[in-house]
Structures are given as structure tokens and as C-alpha cells.
Image (cartoon, rainbow, N blue to C red; front, side, top):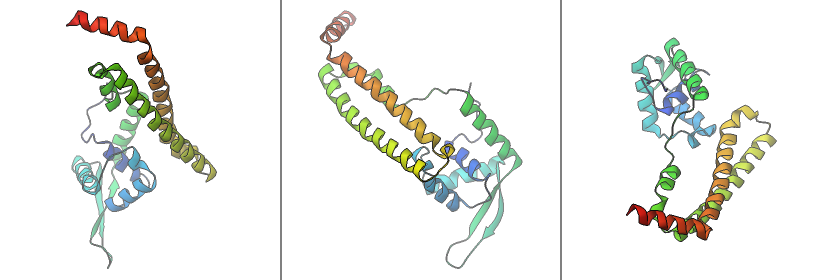
Length: 198
């Protein structure tokens, strides 16, 4: 079972991880997260980043190290990871890696309610999804190929490999579901079931 976290936003985990490299100010953290492509997996904007840093400070996981100012930018506070922050990062990462969590993906919601649409329309919409999945799979493969060609260590693109594996599995399932929906027997038995439950 997932532990209740003082600060549970995934962005907080990314901030803690960034601060293992060196103390930095939130603007620098945001720049690094974007450069590393972490914004594809963690939703945030500038204000949410500053808010999370403040929550981590209040929780004692990060501490103000210094305030810097150069002539071209406003004053910026540099934060460092505390011992408690390092412990929280390690504990949280171990939990996320080792323990499967129940997630609520939007496609799962749509599938749970698919009977609300006519079978023919569902099949047509799933066909569109299949096309979109193919485009994403191709883009993911290209991105991984480019990363391999640039000499980037595979450890730094494992989230992209995972995303590609999920897309590939979803594509297989979607293709299978389209086949089911196209089977006249499937439609007939669904109609019979719906009549019995009315």
C-alpha cells in the first residue's frame, strides 16, 4: 500500500531528484526538467514548480542555501536537499519502483463506459485511435533511435522505452477490441445482454 506523503505531487519527487545533483533555484530546476524531457511525464508550470518547492521547504525536505542576484535577473533563492529530503526521495523512489500503484487512465474510463456508444461508432473511433497510436509509436521509436545515435546512455531514456511499451500494448489491445466489435456474434450477444438487464 502506498505511503501517505507530506508532499505527494510527482513534481516534488522530480525537484528532490534534481537537487541531488547540486543546489539550485527553481528556475534552473524547471529548465533542467524541460531539457531532460521530464515535462512529458510530469505536468507542471512555473507557478506550480515554485509552489512545490515552498511545500518541500515547509516539510523540511529542502532548505534555502543562498539568495543570488545578477544585474540582468531578479533575486533568486537557491535551495539544497536536506538529509530528510534525501531520505524522502529514496523512500518514495523505492516505493514507486517496487510497488505497482492503481492508476486511473482516461482510456480505461472510456473503455469502462464503451457500451454507452453504438458498436459501429465505437469501432470507428477505435480505428482513429489506432492511427494516432501508430503515429505516437513511430515518433517514440524515432526518439529512441536518435538518443541511441547520440550516445545517450539507455538509463536516461527508460521512461521513453516504458511509454513505447505501453503504447505498443495499447495498440495490440485496441486492434483486438476492434476485431471483437466487428464480430456479429459479439454484437448479437451484447444486445441480448442489454435486453435482459432493462
